[in-house]
Length: 105
Image 1 (cartoon, rainbow, N blue to C red):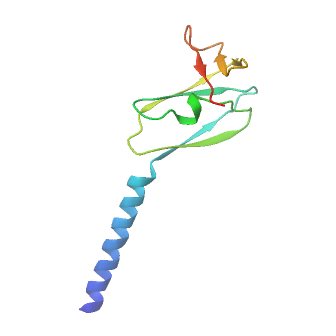
Image 2 (tube, one colour):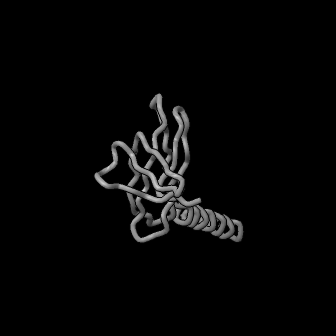
Image 3 (cartoon, rainbow, N blue to C red):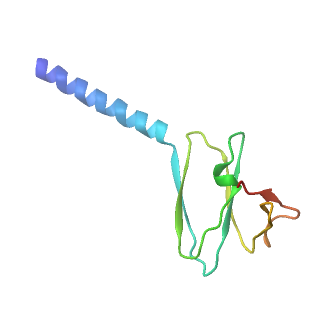
């Protein structure tokens, strides 16, 4: 009977550990650029710290894993034809009118 109880305890511990890892680990988005030109993923986060400065350059043929915390809420979209000035301000061809962000240094 002691062996049976130990197996139950081991199984219960495994389930708790698995559930905890799932809850704590968050979600991973894989962003892949299959275009033959660079794209700039835009990232908007609701009520939390901005991820990856709000966006970044993703070269043709490359991929990036973006891990977000549990409960993350936001949007990710692709942009093209982005240009940065010396202060880090950028404008993109296909961005909404007057979209302008600042890239951290």
